[in-house]
Length: 260
Image (cartoon, rainbow, N blue to C red; front, side, top):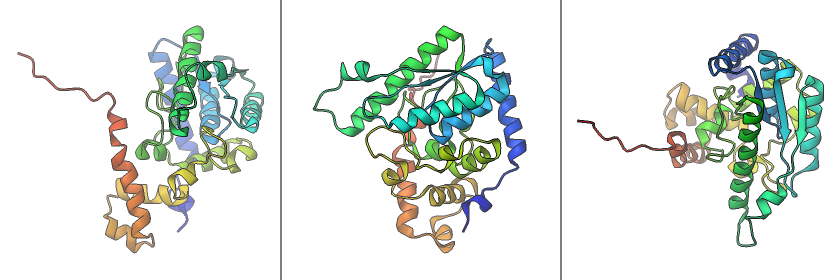
């Protein structure tokens, strides 16, 4: 089963919808500018392309925020996108900020969360400097799986691609001319050396997208999805990830008190 065929969209129409969304919501907020934390990955690259289309290159500010263990290729890929689009781009290392807090008692998950939240502190501060909105870079796959850091990469003013599955992000990125090196490299949040999304999830993005699509868009049962050729173990792994992290989509969870 081909995820790109099953999840195919009218890409031109989708791009138009997202561009209009960015333009309108930014104007509604009293701004005409945006900032993007550019990891060098496909999601932030696509968001940057879409934001430039919506607001113009002179109104988009990109930032690479590397830690000492970050892959140098990530910075190069982010710069490649920024140069292609002609936007203002800065590299702001976060090592000193992170290492002022992190010590040898931290495991890689805690360090990864600190990195994500430190990057968002800087991104929101830059948005204040430029009177700009922060563009989120999470896709629908990540949102459903809770595969983001709460108040880190999950924090943003607008989420332009949060309704697109990862495979749809890839297809639209290819159509818009995102560099091939960005599209084809293994997706990674660059939170520790050698980290990749699919290794962490234990399921390919193609399979994950299809299972999520059939579960939540088509409302099929696990039994029906199993009949489409997916193993029960894989389906349950994806579903467990969704249910285990569902609270992230509700943060902060508010206690409801009836007023007199």
